[in-house]
Length: 164
Image 1 (tube, helix red, strand yellow):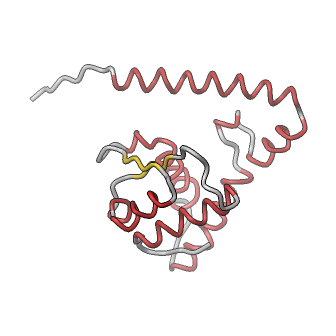
Image 2: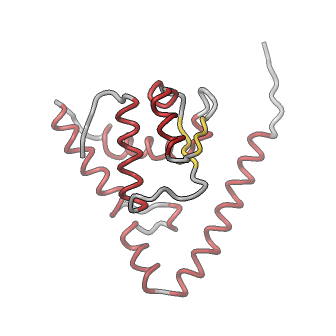
């Protein structure tokens, strides 16, 4: 894992490359969309030209609306509250070790609500070895998606009143 203190367009391009290699064996899937905030690295011509070259759709969240990218906002909150704020970090190396351990724990050991409170490793084992679990989980996921849709619709359908 590489820890950097800032992110340039080249760093963002490298992150996309690494993800494509790791997740898709180097082949960009059809109709893939990358959602980002409006950071300078993501609005740069270099980054956007690269995404066009790979035929990756790019969409931005509205400024100052992290709820539009709720999954990553939730992930960042989990990393901060569960791993960073509970540790004393004295230098960059301490931080690197904590972050590496956090990513390992988050991606393997820690239970996730969207996995019905299984850890990723437990979930993968059940998914691969239990057909009944796969059927159950598909139903669980559909209920979860419906719940998210209802909450999102309720959020955006609120009537806002300005009291001033």
